[in-house]
Image 1 (tube, rainbow, N blue to C red):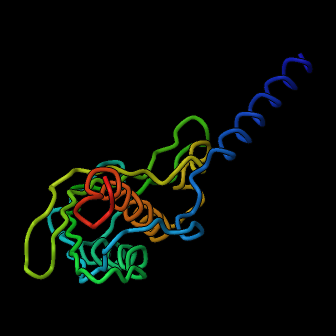
Image 2 (cartoon, one colour; image 1 turned 45 degrees about the vertical axis):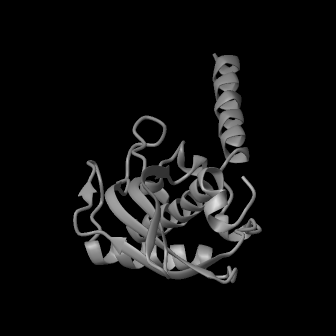
Length: 182
């Protein structure tokens, strides 16, 4: 019996170590990829119609808008390519994971947005809407972020990951629109 329990403990420890090894790195710690002539003119975030996906902790439309705007501006604000672009996001839905039961019930945090890319001057819609979904990352698979993070921390992580996914969408599907070779 002790052998079986040790084997299970080792298996669970190995699984946790494996999952943490493939955890999503913090987007703040990575080098930003080239964005051609991209320069963020401004950010538009619409959050009034965001649907809370149960089970979820609460977030106000103002919180959603404020944190998402800050993370988009943090991600894209350093680019000085000379042509102004507008990133417009409509937050369609979100779930901020409540505390659960480790391993058995680990609700996940999720965010869904509809993303659009505009040229600022002359004002012209270039791409979108494109629906993008993001989760917090693999580091919350075993325990669930509801046990280890506040709702504010979950929202910040989701918005940071969303800004990264919006950038990936632009670079993957619309390189030519920002002056990069396709």
